[in-house]
Image 1 (cartoon, rainbow, N blue to C red):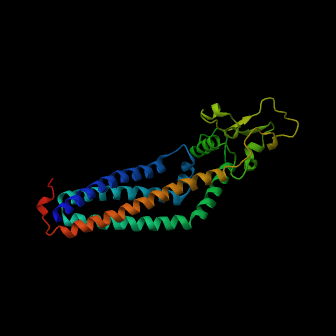
Image 2 (cartoon, one colour; image 1 turned 45 degrees about the vertical axis):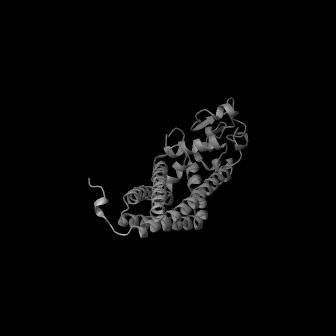
Length: 268
């Protein structure tokens, strides 16, 4: 009965660690994606926000550590090596502590992150230059076109751009232009666009005449982050429960393995 229980525990632990190995690869890929993405709002944050870069490196580190932990756990479970099971338990405990610490950190810094986002976007709009080809500008054009919004608080944020407001004809940010469903599938336009047959003598470049979305991107972007943060927190809670179960199984198996036999460890 005891040997059968150990065998069942061993194979359950092996399956758990195989899952952890795959999960580590996903977390690692997510961290790398944050660093290399150049076509969304993530690009603006990771280029301008130090805390967001730190978060990306944390994801990469945790992902690599999770993959290593999964490998050690699989090896320790199959070969019944107590030292590997002990290392597996220690790694699980470290990752669990890191997850709780990161969760507390992000919870208490959400307000600062929102404020940081606002200052980053406001500065970007203020310094936006037509035809510059800057990656941050292209990322913000993509966000405005896909989310169907304009500016941060409202489209009037663009009135702070000196180059735009110095135009004598009715000129507006191209990515803010109102579009139908078919146009939304196309690549967003960049730079500034002039309204055809704009009246240059009436009132100059009057924002009230712009054919753009008037709603700002702040609420939509923050809503998107809030939704994704909820998904991430939900996944982290699920992973934490699995980690606790893995710690229990590893300690159970470790206590049932009576003696260490290092000849079971494969030699390379």
